Each structure stands twice: as C-alpha cells, then as structure tokens.
Amino acid sequence: MKFDIGSDTDKAICIALKHEFLRCDEVFNQFASTATALIMKGHDRKLAYEAYNAYARFIHHLYEFALCAIARDRGDTTTSRGADAERYLASYLQRSLRKRRDAISDGTAPAWENHISAFPENIPAELPTAFRLARNIANGHAGVKRSSLDLSDFYDRYHSFLHIFYKDAESWWGRSTDEFPDLQEITAFSVAIREKPQQGTSGNLS
Image (cartoon, rainbow, N blue to C red; front, side, top):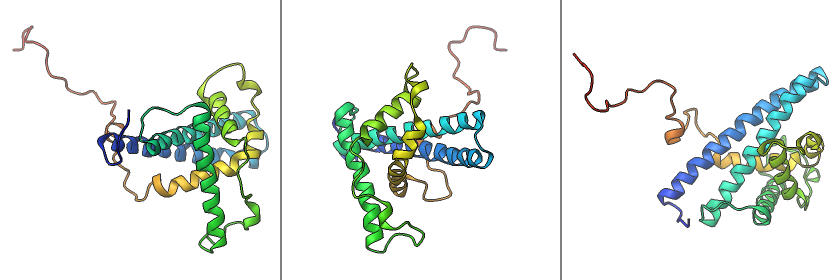
C-alpha cells in the first residue's frame, strides 16, 4: 500500500521503526554483556550459547529495522525481499560508513574515534547477502543450516559495518530522553485481567 510521509500509515510505520530499534538496542546490550563475560572467563558452552543467541537476535532486529526503513523510504508498505532489499541495504550500510569517515575527516567525530584508516571506503560487496542469510539462518528460520553457520566468522568479517549502521540509526531512533516513548498498543500491553462488558443478562445478578 502506498502512503505519504506524515500520514497515519507513516506514523504507524515510525512507531514500528522505533519499536524495532529499541529491540535491537536491548539485545545488543545483552550481547555486549555476555560477550564480555565470555572473553573474561574463556570459552564456555553456556556463555557461548547465550552470546550466540543475543547476537542472532541483534542481527534479526537490525535487519527488520532496515526493512521497515526501506518501506518508509519507498512510501510503500509492501516488504522488500531478495535482491531488491539487498540493494537498499547496501545503500544504507554504505551511507553510514561514509558518514563515519566524513565525521573523522572534518573533525566532528568524538576524540576517542579510531583513525580513518580503520574504516575502508566501501562496504564488502557481499555484505548485504551475508546479512540476509545470517538473519534467516541464525534467528529467522530453524533448519538444517543453523548448526553449520559460522556466526563467529560473520562477526569477524562484518560486525564493524553493522555496528556503524546501528549507531547511525541510534542517532535518529534511539531514546533521546529518560521517559520511555509512547508506542501505542505496544506500551499499553498488560497481562492484568481486564473487566469486560457483560454479554446478556442471563443468570441471577442479585
């Protein structure tokens, strides 16, 4: 469905974008904590399992956030898939990398930022496909490929680029105040029993 920026549909997509980014941010922090414990303790199956799960969820939510951002950019709620999605992903990832390099070049990057030589000019050409496959196999779909997916290798090759994209998105979609955002029915969710209107008047109410 086509829509215009500022419409009710656009506002609904913005809530979904905010929600998905907050999920991504939450699981990244879980991953960082577990990964730190794994480094400090040394290899441990339970910690490795927890770190893997947190990183798989990070990839999943970052990918879903990107798909939602693509829908908003296109002004169309139809979800992009396959090669179409990968073209947009490549554009987003490259733009975030370029912004990071530009900030270093023009002196607006934080003082603790790495030297520009730490950042290549272009993302790896295969990254969008690798991103999609890692999301599908590690968290999206359970199947025979999961036990052979080398997520450690994916992390080593591509995490720096995903992290740049994640931090770039945070500047727009992260929490800007201490007050948690209103996400309509998402933040209205409750497991408390709600009083429902009576159906009919049968039975003795006295």
